[in-house]
Length: 627
Image (cartoon, rainbow, N blue to C red):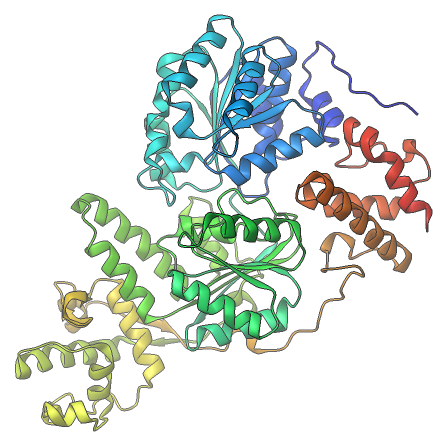
C-alpha cells in the first residue's frame, strides 16, 4: 500500500487534522478557534496544559500556507520547546524550522533563505530575535509579497507584569500589530487570571480579538497539600509509596535545596537529576534531554525548569517550597498528567514559606500598587493551602470558574477537622505586645510560642519572660496548632515579620481587629497526608515505567505494547527526539490492542497521520507480527 500526503488546495481544517496529525476530531473549542484563525481573525486562547493549544495555531498555519498565504511565525520563549515542536512537525510531514542560538551562521542563513522563499510553513523564534531589525526586515519582505500568514504568540502570559513568568521582551511584540496590522495573531497561554488576561489584551493590542477560555479543570490531577515537618523525608515517602519508578518534577526555591534534595533522592535509589540556572548550560541541557528521553527520571529544579515542557507521562509534580501565587502553582502542577492519566500535585508548606514569600514582596523595589496585587495573589494561594474544603473548587474559583467538590483532592478524600483558633490568635498577639512592652525589643515565633505554652527555656529565663501575664496561658495548644495560627495571622496581615531584625514578629494595624474579637480565626487540624498511608502498588507495564494508556490491555497486549515502546525508543534515539514525539503511549496502546496485520489496519488510529503511516507503518507491523 502506498501512502502519500495530499497537498490539496482546499485548506479544510478537519482534513488537515486527520491527514497530518492523525486525529479524527477536534477537542473542545479547538475547531472554533482553528476556523476563526483560518478565516483571518485574532484570538486569545486560554487552554489548560495538555488541552491541545499547539494544534490551535499549527492547523491554521498549514491551512493558510496551502491557501497561498505563506509563513506562520511562532514566538516561543524556550529553545527546548522549539526543538521538540519542530521535531514533532517534521515527523508529521510539516515544513518547520527554528531560529535560535543553537544554529551557526550558515544554518541561520539557510533557514532565512528558505523562509523568504516560502518553503517553511511554521518558523519558531524567541521574542528577542523577532524584534531585531534584521528579522523585522525579512518579515517586511514577506508581508509586501503577501506571504506572511499568521503570528502565534505562545506562553502569552509572559507579556504581563501580573503573570508568573514575566518576560520584558514580550512587551515589544506590540510591533507585530503596529507593523503588520493585516496579519492575524493568536496568543495562547495555559494560565491567566482576569487581571493577567486584561494585561495580555492591552499589551499585545488584542482589543478586537475573540477570547476562547476553556475550563481550567484537570480532573486527572489529585491535589494534596501537607504541613511541612521534614519535607525531604515527606517527599521521599510520597515517591516511594505512590510513584516508584515514575517520571516527576520536584520544585524547590533555592539552588542549594535543589542539589541537596536531588542527592538525597539518589542516595535513596530514586533516579533524580538537579536543574537550576547556576549549573553549566551543557549540564542543564544534558539533564533536560535525559528527563525528556528516558523513563522514570525525577527532575529536581527551580522554576528555571519547565515552561513549555511537553513530556506527557509526568506522573507527579511536587513542591518543597510554596510558589509565589496560584498561577505559578497551576502552571507548574499542570506539567503532570498531560496524557490524561492519573497524576499527583503534592506540596509541603509551612510557616517559613509564608514568612519568606511575604518578605520577598515587602522588600521588593516595586511600587506599592504592584506589591498590593502580589500580596493579594499570595493570600489566594495561602487560602488554598489552609483550606479545609475542596482544593479544586478553590483553585477553579480563582480563575472565575464555578465547580462542585471533586472527590479527588486530599480534603475530599480525607476531610480534615476544623477548630476555632480565635482564642489562640488573641493570646499570641497579646504575648507579642507584652514582650515588646517589657523588653523593648521583638522576638521570633519560636520564643513567643514558648512563652505562651509556659516553657522555661534559657531565653525565657534570660529576659525574665516567665513573669509576663501571658506566660503559660496557652499551654493547652500544641506547637503545631500555634504554628497554624501564626501562618494565618501572617497570611492575613494581622502580624508581620521583620526580616531586617532576625525574622521577629511585629504587630500591625490588622492586629487590632483580632485582639478585639472582631475577626474569627478558623483553622484545619493537622492531619496525616495520604502519602502516610500505604496505597496498593500499581501494576507496572512490562518493559519500563507504568503507563495508564496500557492499563486495560491483556497480557499479550501488554507484551506487544512493551515491544512497541522498545522499538519507539530506538527510533527516538536515532532521530534525537523524545519518544513521545514519535508516537504517544496512547497511540502505542491502541496499536497493541488492535494487533494490526496490514497498513489498512493502522489507518484511523488516533495519532497516526499519513506521514507517520508512510514512515513507520511497515516497522510497526513487523513488531506486532512477533505476537
